[in-house]
Amino acid sequence: MGSRALVLGGGGVAGVAWETGVLAGLAEGGIDVADADLIVGTSAGSVIGAQLASGRPVQEMLEELLSPPENATAIQLDFDPPTVIAIFQKWASFAEITDTGCADVGAMAIGAKTSAEEAWIESFAERFAGEWPERQLVVTAVDADSGAFQAWDRDSGVPMELAIASSCTVPGLFPPVTINGKRYIDGGVRSGTNADLAEGHDTILIMTALGGRQENIGPICKRTAEAEAAALSGGSSHVELHFMDEGSLEAVGSNMMDPTRTKITAEAGVKQGKRLATRIADVWPKAIV
Figure 1 (cartoon, rainbow, N blue to C red):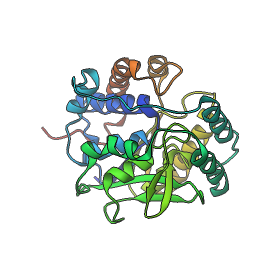
Figure 2: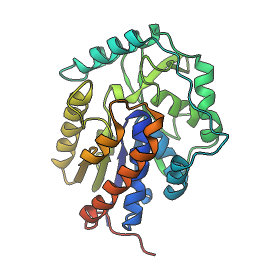
Figure 3: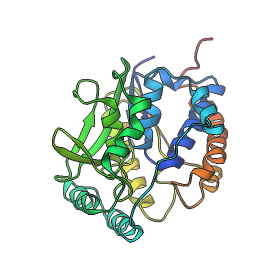
């Protein structure tokens, strides 16, 4: 069968909903990607990846999105819109991603008005506190000062909730997360997928909610993901890269952080996942029931 890697990219609230839906659609089609030998999670993908790696059933994850518990608390946003726009314009202007470019975005993120860091971290503590899962999980982030890439895993000595909080810190929207004296932002700044971390695996499935649109950071995220996929395919790996299809993009709308579109985005993801299950059945064999 060979080794298999699942790469889950960024995409904010929409990314969590869509990726969960796609995974549920795949499961309905008999494809259990939770059995991957490696799960790489960036931003929204880190949230989904951590749950999968910890053994949470994807159907349970989907049901929570479709019918959130009554005591669920929404993430509180406190940011300066002009600053966020400036950050994303800077990010979108990159012809390619470098540490210098990441540091430029990081500097803007550090200076941005956001909610308190403590409250941001606390929003991850209840769900992700505890030991890292035994299944190999890698969560990505970027050092806001140097722009250097950081990959967290169970050998990093960092609590999982801190790693995930750092990976989800969309610059300008949320506060950089302090870990071992350094401040970290969203791993999607370096790449919406960071699929190069899956190098060496025989089959690699990459799913990302970033890169499907031709505005804002869409083009740079698409170029980066496609370059990573091409480099991986140049070896002995079979690589599947999938962005949101037209139905999913329509479900999301223009705001990737809009929680009111979670249900329809997840449902669109399920439809896309069912179609994808047929396509990848030969390279990712169906689960034995």
